Image (cartoon, rainbow, N blue to C red):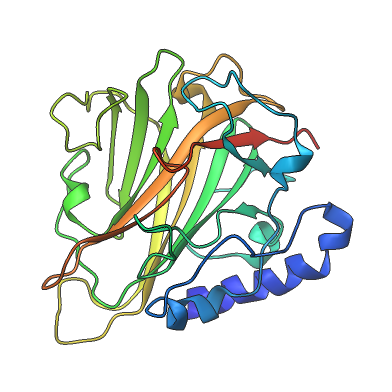
Length: 275
């Protein structure tokens, strides 16, 4: 619960400053399912987001549809190292996805969200996930973290391929360069020799792989070097095709996934702010 409490504190701080930032604090676009409601109450205070209508239309972003969903990523005041712990003073003004959606366009169960900042040549991501059953067994870099509770960050590549960085609840990373039509790093066509250089730390409430207790949540804080993403530029104004996916790995139930920015429903783009 300590992660969710910190998130709520950041929401209150961000909401109080919304009039100055010019970003919307209206969580209008997410339909929360009844099952997700208990989780969503922890995050129901809105966090600054970008009003896509205020940004110029973009019909030529590499790897995206003509009308992508845009998130304008604020520039952080100074570089920092990930700790896995939600620090309100850093993340209060970050842009976020709000609750990830399931295949039916409803709030995914358990609830998840991602937040973004950038600066000093790095994209910073904080990902939160509710989870009552933590599962993680992979211990080696580039191992099958997709079989564990984890989150996958996918970056569009100028040549049409995509770079995927996936981090488990215990901080194990797998990253690879994949064909555009690959569903994830488990695709044998993905080249796991590619290294993102990501620095990631995690935090969780509960005991992994123990079905006797009731777990609660986990988080990933990561810093991805922009230079590793094959971008033509990595400064203010850069647009990065991006999506995030988290699948719940329950030990005795159906696999459920939540996404943002993922085709065919939508195409996500992160826009690096100049200020």
